[in-house]
Image (cartoon, rainbow, N blue to C red; front, side, top):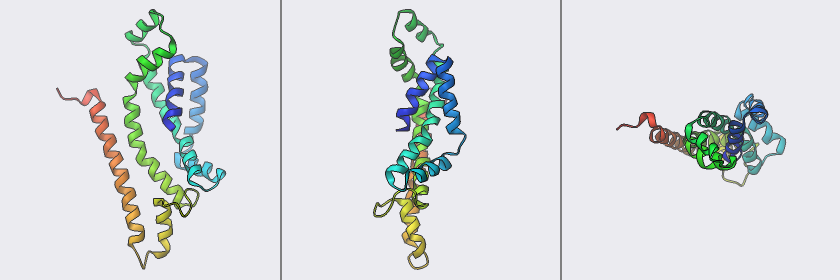
Length: 191
């Protein structure tokens, strides 16, 4: 969901520049001035403890990263010859953005999204662990780890296995992101 907000805003900011770019990037700077976990905690606490509110808090705290990333890519790509040629033949701006620029700058966003999934899972587990995320009876890893604290001396496995599940899932998404970066990065391709 953060991609659905961040990518179009970054595309417009980078493509049009000027006032739109300044306005969008100042809002992005405002959101990026807070650490994502702290911002998500504040938003989730304000909205109330529930899984839906925790997800909304994660979306609000993660979209600016994609806006900044895609904007930087668009600014570098919009000055290339194929974009100038599309302007010269009278192609509408929205078509240039979505058919010419976006396909050429989406690979870093895909890599970043796959690597961010691990961080999002950890942040959601942290929110549930702190009591401002998922609430019982929803089976969420952070909530299970929080509940297991009282049983740790008698049943140590009650908290260890959800913690291992979080660790393995985050590791898998980080490895997926590294693999996608190697596959999609033209500088690392071996010919």
